[in-house]
Image 1 (tube, rainbow, N blue to C red):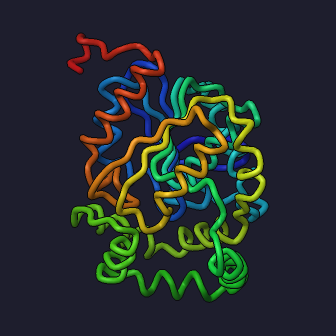
Image 2: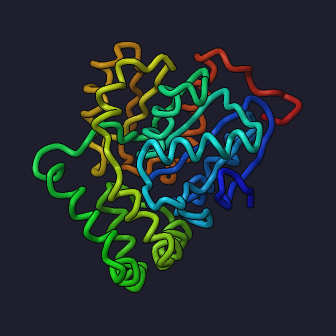
Length: 279
């Protein structure tokens, strides 16, 4: 547990080598890196925090869990730990946080790796209905309690399958524990209620950090075709497609993701694995 920016954070740290920051997506926590992080730690010095309001980390004092506020909070955490990442990896909304941090000069990594990154606003009817609905739930003090009461294994498994992913029973159990926690649910709703990707969509073309987009073909949460839209704004962005995996690809096949991220790091000029570490 670490104090930074007026918050008490839960972080995990492991490994040695170039510094890598892992940022999970909305509704998850550091548990989502449970199998991938140890593999990456054979080559990298890993820092993985629970985002504010998620897992064991405090919620933002303002209650406004917006993209700029989340980015600033993570920046304050890195400052407190004197951790400047050489490479950053973000899943879903975590990739958006890292992109905003790069755009603002808060971090200057050699590579930003997006795992099914959620950079663009919802399109069509969902884009009009989802944010207001999230705000209504966030403002309703009963909603987090109702959600946490209904978080059983069947409901969580159905939710994950709806994202196109099937993960191991132990992983499902950890999501059940997360969503059974009223405070975690409050944090998730706060983030959803305050999330606005329109400014990021507008600014993406200014991103100078090399970007690698890992896109899972079965992702039902972030449409895989959005990678082409992002590449149109950033012609230098690299797209890596994964077959047979969904939104939680890094939890479904961590070995495949570790190997791919390693190759992307090689291409970005990061130091190769150290044989003395056994990697």
